[in-house]
Amino acid sequence: MEVYERRFRAAALAQREVLIHALYEAAELEHNLMCTYLYAAVSLKDGEAEGLSAEEAAAVKRWRQVLLGVAIEEMGHLAAVWNITSALGGSPRFGRTNFPLDPGYLPACVVVKLAPFTADTLQHFVFLERPHGSTEQDGAGFAYERPYVRGGGAARLTPMAVDYSTVGDFYAALGEGLRALVARYGESNAFDGDPALQLSPEEVSLAGAKQVRCLKTALAAFAAIVEQEKVRRAIRSAPTTRSSLESALSCARSWRRTRISRRRIPRPPTRCCAVHRGPRGACGSRTRTRWPPWISPTPATV
Image 1 (cartoon, rainbow, N blue to C red):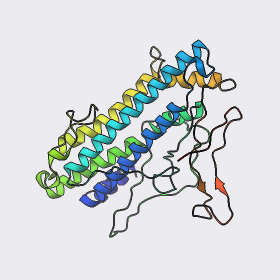
Image 2: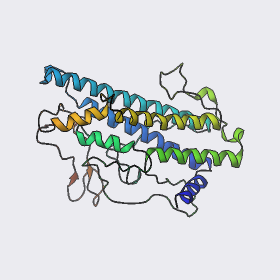
Image 3: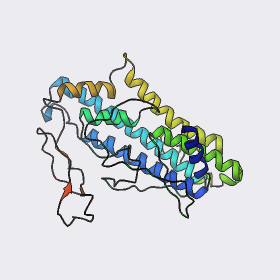
Image 4: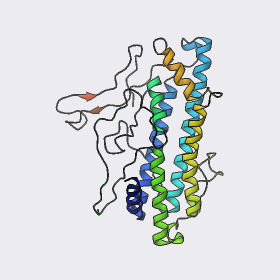
């Protein structure tokens, strides 16, 4: 069954328009993931001036650096996706869907939303980067609203999103689609974009800002993204290097009943209930984030 699904996805992505549509989703996914890491980072208190002890302030500083470092890595992933899109003759996707994301923009099991720094938020980050076949559990409060499956076997006039379980699976599907596209049209016809329109190390200092000119360099860009996620997981699981997200997760669990080291931050945007759409539904209800009792977030200003 798994082999059939891979072949189906490769066949579906063997058209330039469909593949570029999927790359647009990849760009939005990396952009939104970057925002979630940044939101968690800015939710942390800053030093002893905000009521932290010296030990807590030092730990929180390390956590913030880790979260910001991961956000920068997501920027590099975004630059790599942009370059691949440009190499295929498409225009890179710079925008993103506003939070909270409506069901359907991503697979049901890929929940991306803004949340302050908690043990559950960190566990959710670990869950999003889990390898294929992992039994890693998601953090509490990040369950999807309802199950659904995207895509289908019928031919369509416009591109349709493909389903995937993990970010790594998505990039594997994109790689299969690239191979199928090149096999159908030839490498020179597939990669007909102007290399001068791509980001390079001369413009930005990001690991993903490498020019894509052929199938080999495009697959290398995908592989670098997945490999970077593997390195992140290895660092978290290594017993001798416990100063990254895994260490933060352990400490956050032990501090969750005390000062969890979070500051007053804008409340994440809300969405009307699923029954009544619009700025405010006919019932007047909205889906809101349930905040812990020790948090008093300020209302959003934008």
